[in-house]
Image 1 (tube, rainbow, N blue to C red):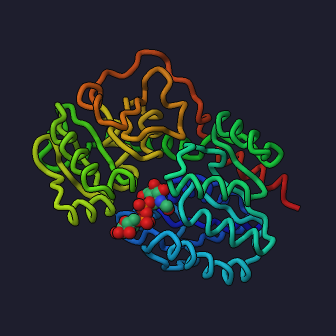
Image 2 (cartoon, protein in one colour):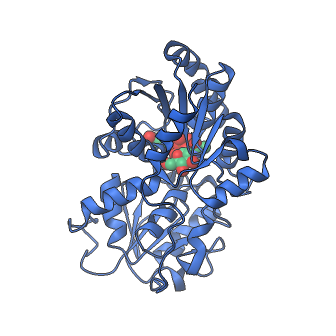
Length: 355
Ligand code: UD1
């Protein structure tokens, strides 16, 4: 069986890692990795391949940044030749980025079977580019790997139940594996933060939070005023917008640093008193690692994280000061994201369904 994975953005490298491992160790699967080049900085791309032991991409389309149309269009046109050359039994697309929709569309138009890893997620917020990417990728794909029961429900409501399989979440696979590997390692924080004392971890990168000057200024000001030191892992989009608007990402509680490699990020979150974020992945990683999360968004597609108050939504920034460093809930956490063996179930389903 020949499987071709298309990835391009940071969260997709994380999702690819457990799949690359099971596909390689299967012995009889040829796995071709195509990187669209959506993320190209070493800290946003290379370190993930190195740290998560993902084989180097076979092809890099080098598409880079651009408007949604220009970026997605460039991927779409470059993918035709690559897919045509390899004619894989399965094209695997991951998550909800512009790389996901480009690859799903390119493959389905060439009548090549497509499977979507992390299918069925919905925020129901049509302002999010990711919401369109998810919905369209799910409807284009032949096989849908849903991480949760909630995702299975969304797919059923859209008439896609017969293409959907509940596998659990491949991000839980990698998160548990890395958690066990980094436990006991020192926490790497900016020099200005004492790792022996409580601290918070923050990330902000969604367009709705970064691209409006008033909104971004307010977020920076609220983070600056939190009661514990805040280690802000700054995505390039945040750094670029803050610099354009003249918004200061330092001062008060704020200690800004570069994005971290995945193992370091897991270790820093494990050692933290709480996470403040607008990232989908980090909300879930906080939950999996048993750390309370405050989400600066009006909704979440990972609704399971809201149970018992592990994750609290605070779109208006009215509660974050009071709740960011709250104690972890005492209730035993459910395991809505599976047992850490989702990638093996994906491989099994690919085998069963390949002609
Ligand atoms: C993309 C995904 C988002 C995901 C995020 C993770 C889409 C629509 N969005 O958003 O779902 O949560 O990745 O990070 O696909 N940049 C760099 N270096 C890089 C990459 C980006 O400097 O390596 C800067 C560029 O200025 C670029 C901006 O960041 O214009 C935004 O990058 P882009 O890939 O368009 O989207 P993300 O915001 O990263």
